[in-house]
Length: 150
Image 1 (spheres, rainbow, N blue to C red):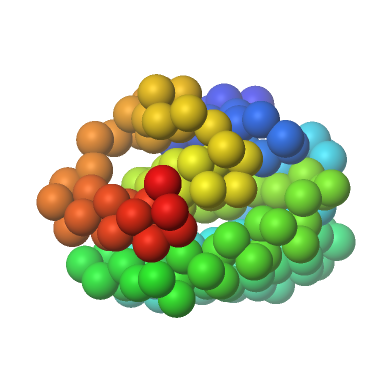
Image 2: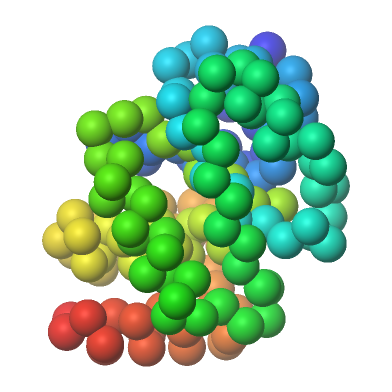
């Protein structure tokens, strides 16, 4: 099994990878690849939610950070918590996932623009490998970029 087999897998700069929901077996592969922290943006009601994920991840010796984001109502608070966790983990290998990598790719777009000072074209290239955000998420991303002084 390879990391590329994980649903919506995407490798990003600075030791970060993102995906949709990994399986129990795939979390073992994530650990074997050197990832130290798993951040989960999915809601417990999300499709293919892994009920025992915290036990699986911590049992493998990785840190688990749940940051559930409501699909239809992403908030500035969600973004700020995400930025804080990623900033604190900047020297470690981080795996970020949600159900389908849509929440994650939007949050990573924002993180890249605001904290990594990545140009829009480059950040959008990563984002669009997963999806083109719907109106809710595009409006959210625009508002966060505007707030942080784009």
